[in-house]
Image (cartoon, rainbow, N blue to C red; front, side, top):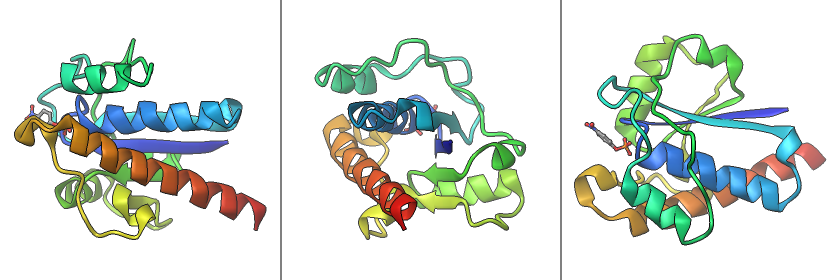
Length: 154
Ligand code: 4NP
């Protein structure tokens, strides 16, 4: 089982988008049973709130539902529960490291690293641009999926 936790600031825009895009990729490849995928926030602000309509509407274009997802906050214990803890931007990475304390197993990544980029996934909460967020998140998730499959066959 490969366990992935996507993390952003509020857990209502980017990380749930990554969670459901990644679940869709895995499902289309018939590998649902091999993955456990979730998402969480670094801040408390949106805890318990549903996914932002911008993310919900963007994913609806691809028949991806975000039904049943409500924001939760990253906990220190999550470090042991996941193989990958993936932030969307550099501030997320700082906050993830603050919450988990240390990363001895090198589980913490920034999403676009998998696509060979140092860029952040810009926050649509501030930019209003869910298309750019979606394109970046799809690129990152496809690259992550490829890496996991390649690692598996190594
Ligand atoms: P996200 O966007 O980190 O992509 O979910 C945000 C959502 C809410 C807030 C900040 C960012 N907020 O401050 O409530």
